[in-house]
Image (cartoon, rainbow, N blue to C red; front, side):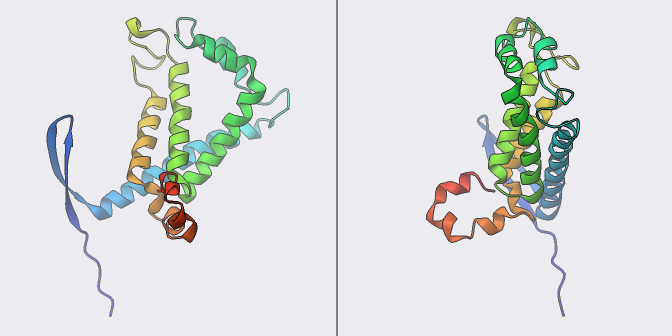
Length: 195
């Protein structure tokens, strides 16, 4: 006769910015919430990449391209305007990286494979999207179109960083299996990409 496993209450104790922090949490609900956040972020990336690819794909002159946004929508007051203008003039290189990057990040998040690497690459992409939305520089407080400092790209960036820190690929993901392989045991640096 199988016994039902009871949820385990744990206490997290840490020091953040020189201040002791302690709180109770449920391992069960933490695992469900991490898995849920992982699947939502997988959907966000997969949907974005597939929509761009479905708009005609790479090489189709009517297809989605980052050039219109990069050349016309990034504010001249943005301190990174020159970088984004360069990206816009090199859209033939940037577009495949955005489209296939989003699809591959989405798949890695979905299946929990090379999760930490994929989440950090997704956070890096969100960092670029966030900085492209800046309407001004430091003295202006880096305002963005839909908020003074924070927009959805910034939120996604922090969420992906958190999921990478938690090792969300181990929760009903392939990384838990990959970490037990002899290749990873013989090359422990691979653990930085997994999790």
